[in-house]
Image 1 (cartoon, rainbow, N blue to C red):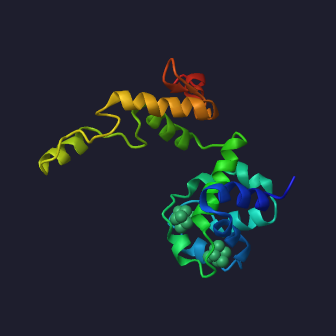
Image 2: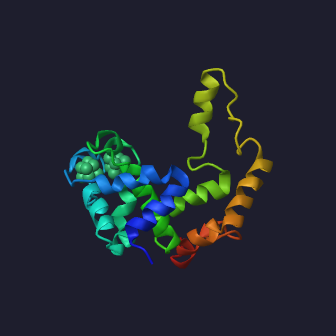
Length: 183
Ligand code: SF4
Ligand code: SF4
């Protein structure tokens, strides 16, 4: 088995291209990503540390809760002096983490919104009013307006097994974690 770094490059390479992912090798640990990170200002999340742990083949980085604190704002990506595609590397690390059974509760919750409505951020009354105010149809042409399309989203979720990874129960439309805790 290769190193975690090889895995990140291979896994992310399928989406972003290997050259893009290989930039992880260019990190010089300058810390500009950490210094720019809005999430790191208020949490224990340290971008530079995540990248270095991956480079050192420290697989425990995949189960660290902080991995989920990145908001994917792309500031580090824009500012890295070495052209490391930081955000995409972090996102790939998350994908690998999920495949190994690690995912934050908040991200699982967001996934349930997709399963229920087709939206990570469902359109509610306030958004509908805003749309109406500027002369738009209050319902955007999405799965919320066309529920038959929602079934297609759910089919993708089931076919890829994403529902199982998240631990979603279709009968109650809740996460197993929520059911266990009686939420
Ligand atoms: S800004 Fe770039 S080179 Fe500097 S620590 Fe972050 S990833 Fe590494
Ligand atoms: S993309 Fe993530 S790691 Fe990079 S600055 Fe934004 S929150 Fe921090």
